Every structure is written in structure tokens, then in C-alpha cells.
Amino acid sequence: VGTDLDGLYLNSTFGRSVSMNGAGDKVIVGAPTNYQEGARVFSLYKDLSTLYGTTWQPKDSNRFWAAIAVSGRDPIFGGRQIAVVQGGQIYISTDVGNTWTATESNRQWTAVALNNAGGIIAATVYGGRIYVSIDGGNTWNPKAGIGNWMDIAVSSNGAKLTAVASSGIGVESAGLYVSSDYGDTWEIKLGVASFSAVAMNLYGTVQTTVVD
Image 1 (cartoon, rainbow, N blue to C red):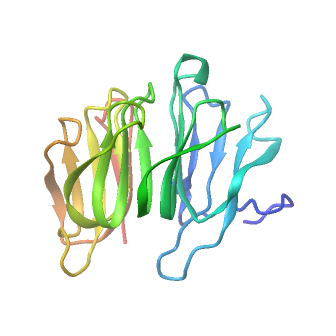
Image 2: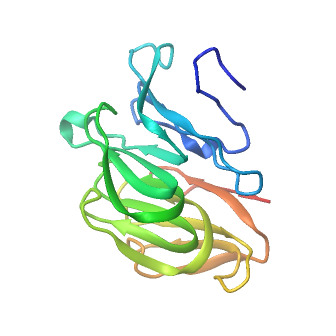
């Protein structure tokens, strides 16, 4: 659905690019990415009011924004916003989206998630690996095997991660993979089908996935 705001679009199919912080008073929207039909370039937006998304203003530059996530903790106490760019880098903001710092290498990033405090971050790559940071995005370590990773979810304490992959040649099998040790080891739980999205509650005890 397009709005009257220049460049702001909500897409019900690729809704994982829409995030809200724990308090529910900051809403972040990134551009959806469609690998079959190509991506459009949009600016990154953030809520500038306490009216739960009534007022919006563009932030940062036009890029192939693929996904975004917001920590539950307020930026004053170390909270973060993380956005990934398809074919680009990972961008981090610690000042409610006013400024963004690029980190990691140019990759086909598809999704990003972080724990409640914002210190543990996980991001997925299409045709690549899962990258995890345990220091707020300063350093990143590749985890899991090469796959068409589509989406990822992280529990509140950062220990539990669930990632989903679509099918492809020469990559990890399509399926739903879980880790309970901060991404160090992974176990496939659901296979065969191609998955496109996943979400979990704070504790990782309730999880939901989308099968293509």
C-alpha cells in the first residue's frame, strides 16, 4: 500500500522489514526486497513523534534496504536500530535513526534481528552464511553453512536463534534451523519446503514460520 509520503511503502508480502521496539513507540520501516522481481530503492524512515507512527521523516540515503530491526531497550541505555542493504552493508544507529554507521562487508543481506538489549545481532545472507555479532555490531563472525538464508529471529537474551532458508543448488538444504548457543551450532528442524520468514517471542518458546 503506498502512502502520500514520498517513498514510503508498506508491503504485506515482505512485512519482515517493518519493526517496532519493545515499548511500541518507535516504528521503523525499510524497503521490502523481492528477489524474483527485483528490489526498489527507498529511503529509511523513522517515527519522529510519540503518536505511534503518525509522523514520519526520511533518514539516511536511498539504498536497496532489505530489512530492519529495533532493540527493545531505549537508545539512551544502549539500544540500537539495525538495517541491512541488499548487495551492501549493515547499518547501525544508536541515536534513534539520526545517524547510521556502516559495518561488515557488502553481501546479499536478506534479514536482521537482535536481542532486547541490542548487543547480540544476527543477519542472514542469500547465497551466503549467517553472521552474528555479540558486541553490538563491532565485530561479526560467520555461522552455519552457505545457504539461501531468508530470515532470522533472535530471543530476548540472544541465546536462541531460528533461521529459515529457501531451496537452491549447492547450498544448505531448504528448511528451518535452530540454535541454542548464540549461533555456534545449528540443527535443522523442518526440511523439504522452502521458508521465507520466521518470528519468535521474547523467550523463543513460541515461534512462527512462513512456508512458500
